[in-house]
Image (cartoon, rainbow, N blue to C red; front, side, top):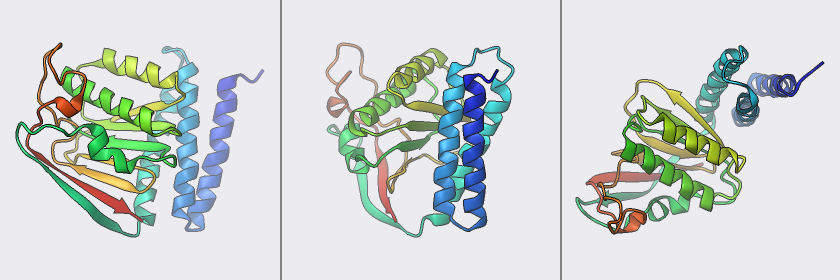
Length: 231
C-alpha cells in the first residue's frame, strides 16, 4: 500500500522530469522553478518522517542536489544586476531595522529567500537570523521557503524551534552546511543584498535594555550593505 511519503516522492519525480525537459530546451528559469518545487515537496516528506527512518538520508541527498541546481540555474537566466543602493552604517549608529534595510526587497511575489552567511553560529547570531525570519514572515505573505547556507551552528535547539514554528505557517526552513566566505541574501522576486558582515549587523543588547527587541533602537556595528536589483 502506497503511503504519503511515496506520494511525495512520486510528485517530486514528476517535477524532476519537468525540470530536465526545461533544461534540455534551454529554459533555465522554468527549470529552476520546477526544481524549487522538488525541494518544497521533499521538505514536506522529511517533516513527516521519523528521525530513524532509513528514507531520510537518500531524500536529504536529493534535496541538497536540487537546492544547488536551483541556485546554479538561477545564475544562467539573470541578465543584469544593477546596484540600487549602498548603505554605509557607522559604528554605534541606530535606526537600521531589518525592515528599513530590506523592506524594498519584499512583496507579494516573494516566495523564497536564500541566506548565505557562514556565521550563524553563536546564540546572538542565531537569534539575529530568527528575527530576520520574523521580518520575512510578517512582510512576505506568500513565502514558502527560507534557505540558509552556513558553516556550523552551536544553537541547534534555537534552529529546531525556528524550523517547527515556520512549519506551522507552511514555510520550509532548509539548512545546508559548508565552507565559504561570501555573505548575501537572494530574494526570488529579483533582489539581492551583499552583506559585509552578514546578518551580524547589531551590537549586543542585554535583556530588558532598550533595543533588545526593537532592532531599530539597537546600536550597529560598522558595515556596508549593497542592494542590487536583478532582471
